[in-house]
Length: 442
Image (cartoon, rainbow, N blue to C red; front, side, top):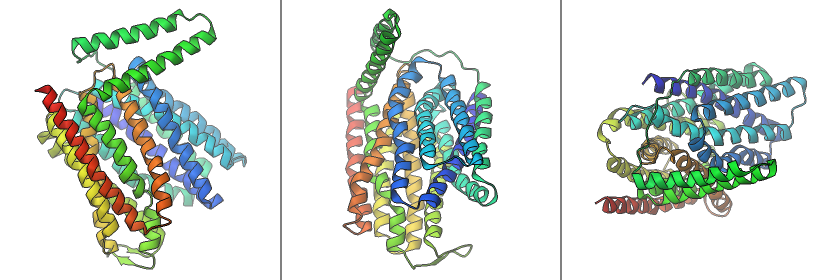
């Protein structure tokens, strides 16, 4: 557990610094440009590169040192952030420079996240995966609460170039914690036939790389090996009902449920404009107040859900079948609560449902990660997480392409209702895959 503590502590520092800087940069873009096109470009540069790079980051996590793949992106991102800080201090910064930095930061995440998720089972004691994944979820949720608050304070106190150095500091601290982890030797848990197949495929691809003598052939052989890895990872994941259910379930949920939830700002400005809510300790009057309350409510729900899964959930969900059932229930609850956001009669009811939506999301995430880690062969874990990250990350912007235009021609609440209703068949589909996996095992 000391290894787990070092990893989670390092990731907590790394995530906090990255999130603070991400909020600060996005707010700077909004204040300087005040255009939707700039925000669209910021979203594309901040999200799409991670989705693309994750396709290659997964195979890298299976072939190379996962510990180094966690540390190197942090160091590279820190170096790029130092350069951006210098450009702000000298007055050279512009939107184009920020977009390039967002692209590099997002690409680094595409390498780092599959490596982190693959590394967790390498250092986690047997039977503790769900607890550790749930604690990781709690860290993410706490980060979503703390980071914007710290960013808001810093933006009002110090110049942006100095805020950027926060990420550099936390990245160095995070790398320091991870560097102290001693990785134990682990044997593959895959059955002999699958293990031999994977070994033969990897050996064939490796021989092609070794046979290349010049730079051009080496690059082509390496690229060919990467695509072989991607194809093998896709075939492997889609051949296991539980892995297929988790990956497609997450991607489809991001497509039909998470995408509408990114239209919360429109919902607040259209449905609750001019409606105040006095909670006793705070009075929500402006659109920004309500948007902040929405973010805080969802993050609190994620925090509560993660705490439940790391304590009670870890005790009652001891095997893959129980965890898969919880994934199905969680996806259904996400759909129901998204419908609730669209039909909420008032702002107070909306915020309560928002907290419940965060809890439902947390109930999904922990078991999903645990299933991918525990039911994947060690030599394929990175590819499984790379595939999941890519499909889930692409799901949200693709959903936005459909739901965002709809929000301009139909009432915004209908968009939420439609997204929630479409999530329920996703839960049913994942349940069918789960039952098929049980039948195959029998």
